[in-house]
Length: 402
Image 1 (cartoon, rainbow, N blue to C red):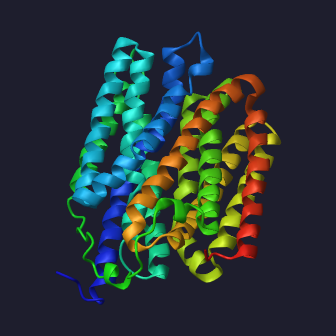
Image 2: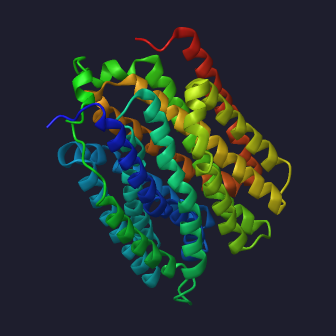
């Protein structure tokens, strides 16, 4: 049954709240996997520290591999069912990580992180699900609302790690993955309250344009720039965040300080979401994306200025805020490139490309850190951010229409 237009905002608000809560719980697995992954990887492979970031890269590979299946499952079974399946995949990955740590099996641990990353791919789709109903202005706000759940995720994930990682000593980090499985079960319960909207929520009636092929869609300047800015912001954020815990430990800071650094970073990633949507509505997508990319350049500058604890923490905070502005803006911009009937295939392709490159950034992070040090990682942010800013200027010049 088709819904009256007056019902769309009510359903949209309800689902945005549910998804924000699910983001707070299930979204915490990202911070947990990243804060524990490289450190646990170094523990499992002490003779090959260049491999330490491979488990974090495996997390990103999992997000890329599962990006297209998420879109397929969402289209076939609906958002709620697919998101619950994703959480169950994460539970299995967390249990497998504990088993890998018990056996001292580095590559099995990488497989576990790949599955956890697969669960993360489903979490990434929460932002798209929030934009399933309502006007273009509401969609920007809804995406922002959902990502505010990451503020709680920053506390929940890192607090669970700090309180549980040593529960099973002399087996480090196993308790953290047990805690991760528990959080995912809570997330499944939250997702049961998500109201299915499918294709009959009223918006489809307003979208009378014929469905286009992917080849036509991806040639649009707006798609190219949205993808470039999303890839630049997310890949650079992952590139720097992956290497940060190892760099902090290498330069004399404790594991606890490294985990807290990730907490401040994740807070900075999601905290601005309380007002990012409103800023996009007021000033437009392109200016907000540009500000985010500028903050990534500032982040690199602070990191290059020194190796004190404040340098690491402030650079990670700027990294998080820059990602928030650039990525939310790019996600909203992507919505201009497709019609309602095209959303699943475009979103799936977008996230497949995005997380494939994010995975490459994670793998590169360990190698660059090992060869060029923390300054080498920070330097990479500057030219790529400038390239993305130039793409915004190009889009403004050529326009967003095909």
